Image (cartoon, rainbow, N blue to C red; front, side):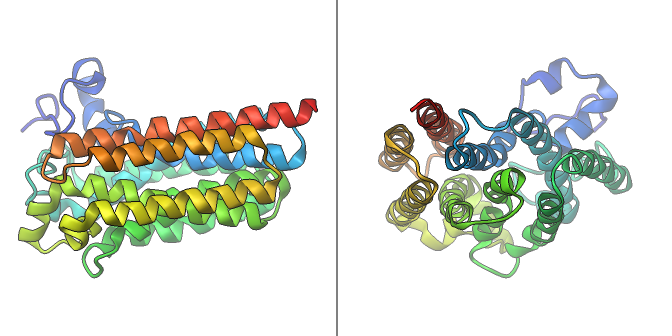
Length: 311
């Protein structure tokens, strides 16, 4: 399979396949540029945290540079994380129908070139990180430990989704740290709530690979919960709503913030009612819809900051 002809089975017909230069396609696929949903899900806790910091600080809106920098950082660091994941999992990916067409197992590029690409992405992310205060820089660097460990977790624990939650929720700490140069209860509670949210949506995602994972011995909460997934999601999503609501309370949030949280909660409830764990296409759509859930919460938080500053 050549670089030009290679496509990824679960992401076909996107802009990378049709518009990107042939030489760039394997690297854009490694970074999941053909599937931006992961960047959104990494970004949203950053934006929530920046918005809650604005509420707590009495500002009408989150720091605009932080909002922009988090967006850029989410794209490059999600790309770096996916590249690292693909390097670690290239042999496992070759045994799974949905992932065997990824750039490394399909031969679109080599592990050495992927490693160089990984370093390049990480350096861009570090350059963005250097624009923040010293505490936030330290906190951002600390996140790399969680990111490094995550791909190995599914080999030895039924709970790799916790590892993803720890990594993908780190932005819930960063927004507050960038604003105040420290961590306080609102950020810690938001982080915990985001972890519960990530465990929930990534369990839905993992049901796409449940049968292949069982054949090759890969563990996940999708396999662990199996037919009781809906009940488990009720617990995780409820925990997310309660913890995020407590974070909003501690930050001094008002009616608009809680209205955004209510819409977020309603969307999570809708996901549970629609879930069919034996329908991979539906699992993907429900997983993907968490972007809209997160944006509803962010909109409520931003509106609350505006109203609070104007009062």
